[in-house]
Length: 316
Length: 283
Image (cartoon, rainbow over all chains, first blue to last red; front, top):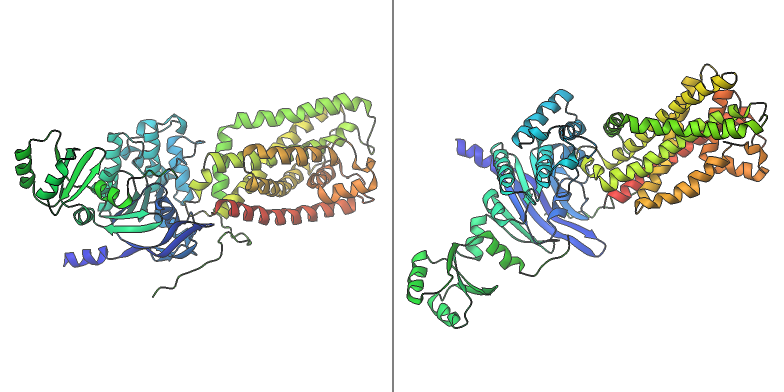
């Protein structure tokens, strides 16, 4: 019986976008995208700078109004139910908008007031969040005295005060040290257990692969791929990647040995993408004695670079 | 299956929809104010004292009487009105701009159930409050000083009437100030309203010399265009019992005119300022 309940819950659509578009004059930031996010899911929005990730996130929390299309959050339309939506959505924006006129703890208390949380309860929740995000010692410090990592953690803590159903994390770990990143990941995992729906944007593919149930890749305002991380890797790259220092004589030999594999030359390295098991590589390497060889699991970064190209994006 | 919506601009002009959320914005600013009390109080007390010394005692010694009042009694109500103007205008331009543009306070606030209209209205409400506090302090300072020179210049209701006048006058000034803030591309832009609007108004609104000494058309212009004229008329009426005679109009006409003028201008600019803010912040 239990799995039926669970599956019906996981099919519960919490966010739904249909032909969602955001235009600025003739520039189209988000170009008619459709997607659904289910309750309790963690979805990662990936894309190069300026792809439209942040714009999409901002439309979800009603910061930006769509130019056209439909967008509902918990069944409420962003066009006329902004207040109700913002009550159930928690936001950790990309830029630091902590209130520098208040101390760390008062940032949380004042923010809780915006949600009508009574003072005593606000203080209790604030202390709880400070403890979880290891900011207790900074409790009475000024915001300006915090490091970037501490600020990011405090912004995350602030987004959780009103116990949101949906959490929007716009690049939550940018500028964090590994310890703080793990703290953030841990927080996301705990929230998933509580059936909180999480949408996160990130440039760290390992982060997306670890945390997200599903990945939506956006480029030039359009969704170019949508699926589970493992499936996307399998579909676009394969299982394993063999990397060898570039040598042009090797190319024909490699093509002959791995007729089905996709072979690319990137940054003076040859990359062979294949679903063949490790043993095949072993045999080949044994035969040829090549220097500087790496065999690794295919990852999301391979997918991302394949789909969005290698050109640098300067805007955003 | 699904109909595609093509909505009009959400920033289109409308009468602001406002709830009690406005008080949360007010509370936030009030909390910051009370924490930095010493910085906020001293300068606002010092300014009128300097005016009093320079004009009241210094210049006033050469001036016998204006409209039957000692000069210091003539300028005392104006000093209260000026401190309101300065206090509110500064708060709703520079301070609001810093919160909006540099500190991104508004961005954080509108991610909560509070709307941008309520944030703007909260800023206006706070600006008026801040100005009322400012000018009430000045009222006390001026009142105490006047005890040392001649007969006290206050009537009994002064302390009830003045804060009321200040608050509603403050709402009007705050609304006008917020219009400038909504269109300011950068912070130095406020030099324009301060030098072209506030400073001239400071001297041409019946503050340090009677408007009635100006040519008749100038008196009319002051009545029609300068908000401070009406605030000064009200404070002077409340403190000394009579306004001066401007454009042939006496206290009996000028007081109701001031009340109506302030209410109408306050409502008009309140609606305009909130719509300009929406236009700026909803992109």
